[in-house]
Length: 147
Image (cartoon, rainbow, N blue to C red; front, side):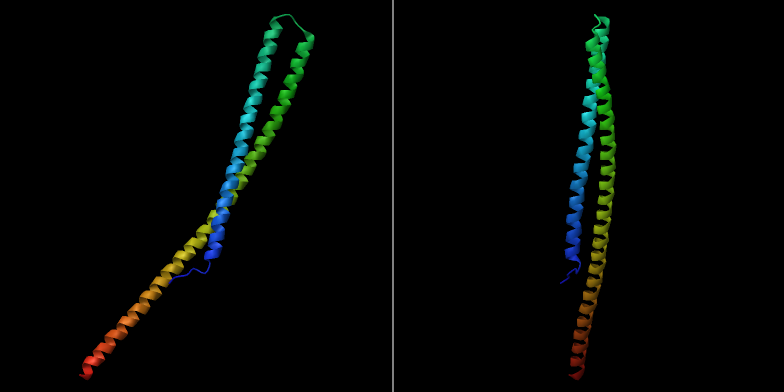
């Protein structure tokens, strides 16, 4: 019966690969969430610009215009901050992807080694079987020669 000596390590590598897949998924979710949050901020900024444009055609209220200006500046800073968060999340996704690729490589190396050892085992078993058959044939031949 074939027993792969590195089976516990292979199982560990498979678990590690699954863990890396989950980490990549979480990093990807964070990246997508940050992009969605940025879109919300951009839409809010656009609404503020439209509101300012509408109010500029009506009676000019300096306090409201000043508030809209502050809000606009705040939104620009928030969008800039969100862009930095998106960049950081994208780097995290790429890092997790590279870690997953490495984990897959390590698992495949062990699986290929297992396949090679299995083939060697099969060849050895076939050789042993052929030796047994040869011994039986030789025994029968000698038994027939004595008669």
